[in-house]
Image (cartoon, rainbow, N blue to C red; front, side):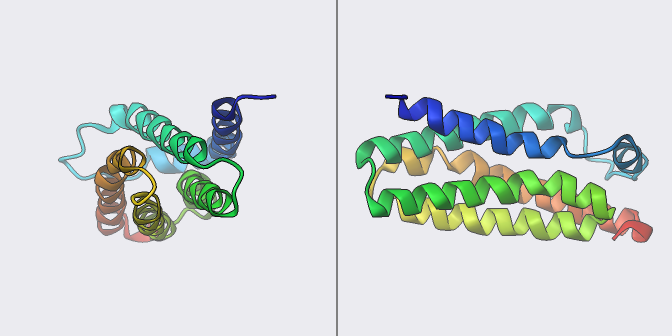
Length: 157
């Protein structure tokens, strides 16, 4: 039998591969956008998101192990998957449509989904809920940054 942490990590990794569905012209578009002057931490963003995804997968693992293979647990796994899909969709959707507005909407939606997941898992495991706090703290920063970029790049809303 395959360990649950391998399945959860594997699914998270496969979904994360969706973020690579961008072309060189997509990257070029994004590189040429103006950024807020205070955005000095852009190089750290991939590392920040890596930590957030690890925390999210760990949270899902805790929930699964608490009550494996029940209807309620499967529903929570679907919520975790939905959260990751919306989070991963941010880059390819924003790049493909060349729309900072789409990125802002996806960022805000991800935050709301994470908040709902956190509320859903809190009665099951405080630790699982605490592991979602990095997402809840970082997501508004990323969403706000994208929203600020709309004002600096009016042609790319």
